Amino acid sequence: MPPNKPSASASIVTPLLFVFIYGSGFVGAKLGLPYAEPVTFLALRFAIAAIILGVIAMILKASWKQEKLTWLLSSGLLLQGVFSVGTFYALYYGMKPALSALVIALQPLFVAVLGGFYLQEKVTLQRWAGLLLGIIGVAIVLADGLTTEDISAISLTWILISLSGLTLGQLIQKKHCAQMNLWTGGCIQSAFAAVVMLVAMITLDTSHIIWHMDFLIGLTWMTVGVSLGAVTLLFLMLRSNTANQVASVFYGVPVAAALVAWPLFGQVPSAIDWLGFIIVAASVVIANTQFTKTK
Image (cartoon, rainbow, N blue to C red; front, side, top):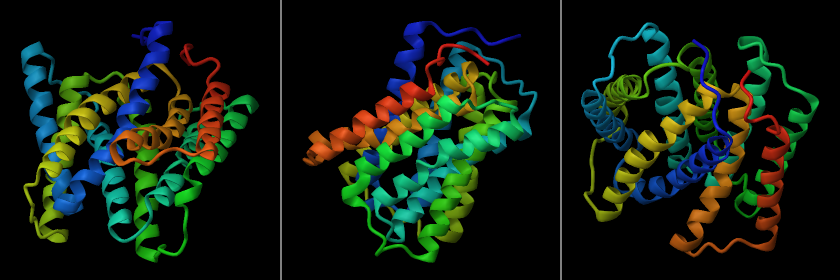
């Protein structure tokens, strides 16, 4: 059964809401990570998300039958677990947030290239122009924080692992799991990611947690806002649009992170930042002039 065509308002509101919530996740990570090591933080996050999604699924009496369980588990682990672990450990080993965000911003280009082979999605010249313009806009937004002095082999390896997880997870989700039940499918994905993080926690982390209020706020937002809210919106977009269309929306994530950090941390955007914001917005529009159409 083909996916329903989204309304015009949903096609605008859903990406904007996703970008805002997903971008604000960097703020949640910044608040929580000083009080728990990366894998410990993620194990808690995914476990709580799985419990909440499971409760919602039971209330709604959603079906737990999964026809493509292996693909479902793979997609969830890559999109959430591998992506988050890679990003968190790249930061943990000294990579500056701006540089890590710039590397992750390459994801739309990788999805556009690999999507042609894996999903048979055609990328027009107009969309390529939008994708390339987006990289320029993101680089401008992040320019003040870009530095190569803290790059190490281990931090670079972790951020490339993160980029691979986000890219491959999105492609698998689009091809094999786009029509999954959001509640039961999301619960199973989060639970599997939590189990993997728990195993990793035993081997990689000390499992020590400082129960500070900032940690609780960060964990709550990363769980409810990102794992439940943003990831569900991502799945909804993948259900109705091509993978490369959805990937281009990720250019807005660093912009959202910068705007959220403005009132919370007093990081006032400069004139150059606003120029980057405008270029990113233009790139997404150029890449998605047919965003309301399904493939």
